[in-house]
Length: 236
Image (cartoon, rainbow, N blue to C red):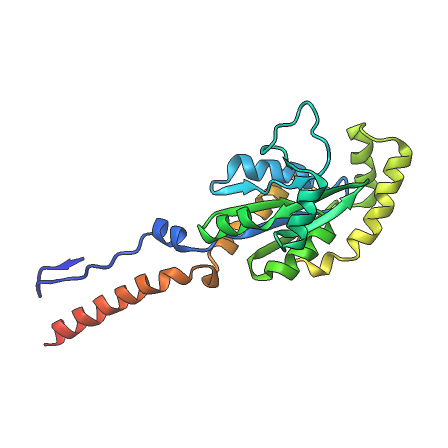
């Protein structure tokens, strides 16, 4: 900024883009009982939000013919998984039906250190493990269905599971929903567009939190110094 009256020049400028680039990334975690619509909201976020990528898990499960290594999962053997687990290279992990699934630490830490946001579509136990490892970087959202009747109706409409499996999913939901208060936010998905916009608003607000932008401090201080210099020269 140039002041023609006193002939001073303030050299520090800060744009909104700079502020965004200077911040630390975050880990956006979505969890929900089956039938709440979490995966649909996650898909919409990935389609419409810039600077947001899905965390790609590692697994010891055999790769299916339709899956691409590095896109759907990073496939590895049991020995390599144990090495990563024992070396604390995993942020969270679980065993499901004899196979292991986990989030590798390195890619996530690298992303958030460079100001990129990572989306996690994981269960409650995985979320709590992330809390233990990197709580300040985690923004957790619990997605709820509007009612148990609607949750059951959605599971039936998917036509993917038998009545027995649906009953098991609903039983599991009881335990999951008891932990809702441990999440940072709760969003009720009674209308998909509104639920998506609410989660999107959470993401935008969390990106602007002061503690996520430690590198912008020198830029702000530069503006303050410029202002003090200009005021001092005007006074003289």
